Image 1: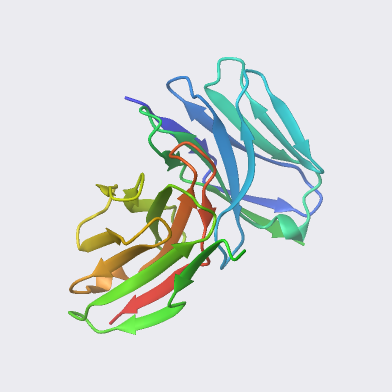
Image 2: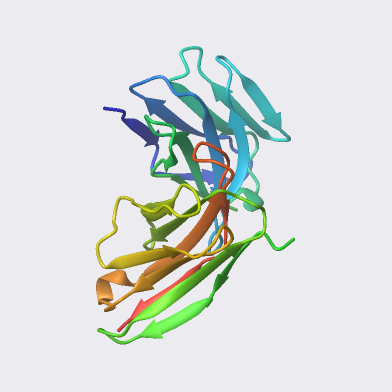
Length: 111
Length: 112
């Protein structure tokens, strides 16, 4: 069956350092989405990747979808305190009936 | 355009009490979802409704029931609350199952 792992579970970085979270699937994904949840808040959609090898940027955030559409990453350059939160990947289940959310990566920033 | 709204925002229940969490969306979405999120944990799907008139179990449905009242509204009912149901409950909606989900602000539930 389909298995997707999101790593790492936690990441503590000094402010200004870079941060990366990964989602790795055992099967090809039709698309992958990324969400951010601030502490005490609700998940908010960031971006969707659909094409093989796709790379999208939002200011300091870079999102990649692997050539085989089995892997995706979210990279933040020069983290700021506003980046604190949990980042989730989400992908359609096998029947494309609904999204399944990854376990999330919690980012904390050391000022 | 309020997006997804949830009521109440906070609730304290005693073990055995019942309550209904309300969710409404004004985006004309077909699909709606209920998740729970325990402290420091990820999202677990309780129930979802792919379209008006249908509901399906998610990952953790035991102890809950749902009603898709109409296209806009999707309620979650706890018939006999247990301390293990202490959590934050999020409602979400999307145009279809594989599309972007929009979340409500959540209901923080404490069961004593």
